[in-house]
Image (tube, rainbow, N blue to C red; front, side, top):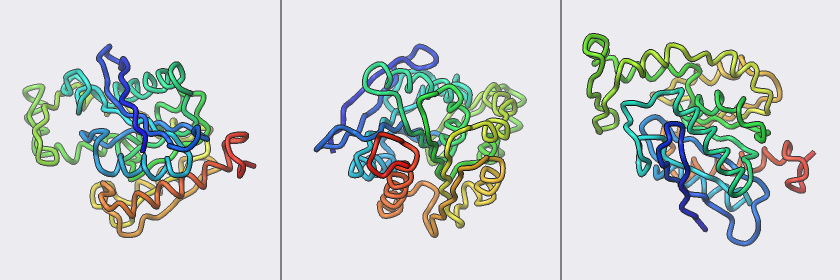
Length: 260
């Protein structure tokens, strides 16, 4: 797979790092922007696997580290859900100026919620795909419950997330409480495909039902059977990539021979 290292300026004027995964044999039939899960990075295996699966179908994918994560600059403790949304909008503007504006928006877990919010400010996007996404960004608070009192009392606390320490500040919680997902989903005005595993023990399957019910048509739900939340099995990610690639042809008029 051809991967170009890219850098651009994020929401807080920090230098953000990413990769653009491109098909080898021909120009992309579409460009996709990918948002990783909460405290993950662009280098998570499932993110790389998804880029590989989509490039085999002719889709170029840009994946990057949100501010304060991975190779991107910034202080994670100063970021929040809103800054993630703003980073996505900045990423789409960078793609538009340097390559082509994204036709497809893909988000994993909290990255999916951020993408649903960001879509309103990414007019080039015709379709949106979410993977294991919470219907409410406040869902992540369940991972902070052991430190909630400390965060409220002291204004911050160090929280263990996936075996790594992260400083979480009260402003992060306050920002989550201000998010309004239902309106964003209802007014998405794009074709939406929702991937979720029924056995997902990180973000329950009821979240997919809530997103589906809030969204207007056209909308599609795809069950991921026994897949884990992080999609660490390459076969699961390959399936997601293949389904997305087949599905988007219906909506990218003029981008592929299978478009309606």
